[in-house]
Length: 152
Image (cartoon, rainbow, N blue to C red):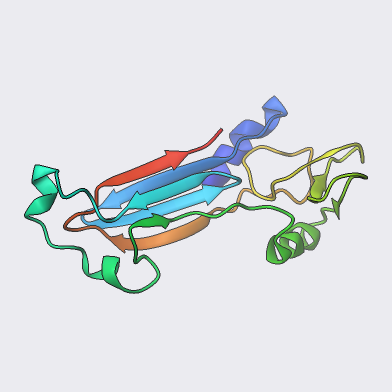
């Protein structure tokens, strides 16, 4: 889906960061590309009628998805060493503008750049790829309350 979305966006000469969630039964999967957020509230609220009678999910207490509020996505930025390697591996270039601290992925023309390494449709930025970061399955049960997906 991300690769098809990338192909559809390319003729428009624009780009978009994206985050999506898929729920299969009680299993949640999240995919993201760019500087989007997926945040899961694992604790619910003691005052909510539906959550008072529910036990907590087993993976809410331990493991990588434990805790009250859990980030299920991460930024894809050239300041992350692994992301910078991905950019250069596909022919992109990472640079920092004078007076700035955060690196960018260079525009094809050599003028300017973007501060993301993954997005759909950014064909003018070699090195920005549409490959999503995928998290899951996250088992949802009990007092799992809210999944928030955020992008600009």
